[in-house]
Each structure stands twice: as C-alpha cells, then as structure tokens.
Length: 186
Image (cartoon, rainbow, N blue to C red; front, side, top):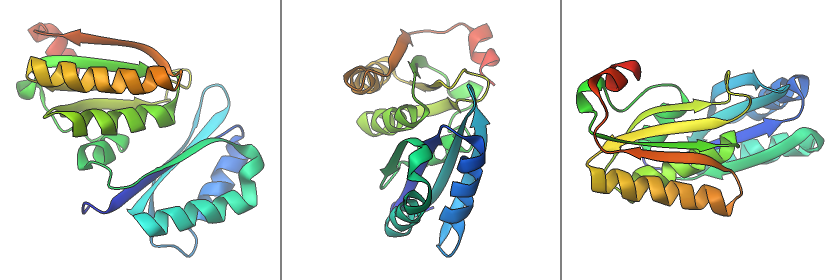
C-alpha cells in the first residue's frame, strides 16, 4: 500500500448494524474491508482502507444510513504501513528484532490505532503486535520495540494522547525484556 493509504475504523453498539454498515461502506467504493468483527460486550468493529478520499466517502455513505448505532469512528490519513499491517494482525518485528519494549493499553479500539500510528511516527520503532478488542473486553493494546530512547519517546507520546482522550488504561516500558518474554510475544 502506498503512503496515501487511509484507514477508517467504526465501532458500533450493534453487531447486526455493524455488519450492515460494513456492507454499505464497501458497495460502490474503491476500498478494502480489512476486518469486520464483534467485540465484547456486544459491540462490532469495521475497518476499511484505501485512498483517503475513497475511505472518507465510504465512511460518510455508511454514516448516512446507520449513524444511530455508531459509538465512535475515525479516519487516519497517511497511516503508517506498520499500523495498517498491525490492524490486520501482521507484525513488523520478529523475536530477533526485540530490544526494549513499550506496551500501551487503551479502553478504545479506535484510539489504540490512532495512538499506535502516532507512536511509530514519533520515533524509529517497530510494531510487534496490535490487538483490537478480540477477547479483550473491548479494549486494545499495542507493543513496540526498538532502542530504549526511541521506545520511551514513542510510548510516552501514545500514552499522552490516550490520557488526553481519557482512554489510557496503562503503559509500561521494559528496557531489557527476558528471552522468555520475547519468545512469548510470537
């Protein structure tokens, strides 16, 4: 995907309306449905990507038909490719890449993605993992790795963003994780 790729995330208070909304967004537009799934407690998330204008148009088309069931939505233009892949469960790092770790946990799936995008754009870090709501009670988290200074800067940037949005659960920086912890991440 190119640098002009945008990501839109929409969280619903209804699974049925979430699926129908995703269907509406994907009809007639040049976008890709990356994920479409229920979360706890009885919510639903749809994630689409594509050219920024196409993503915005698809989101607006969906909002016209189902806005009453939308809890939260966002469009992230020029999303970092690591975060785009992370939203699909594709890590940017492997166990051999692990140096320091930064872990950021949020009450919001959508704010998790926004915070991860800010973090990887803040410093030279790799996204190890990003989980969005599945088996997490509707929360999200991400893990980054890199040199300790970069990880500290990126993690704090994400935590400050989430705290300002009242969505921060917790964050931790691990300067030198054990080999066992490194292995457990993959």
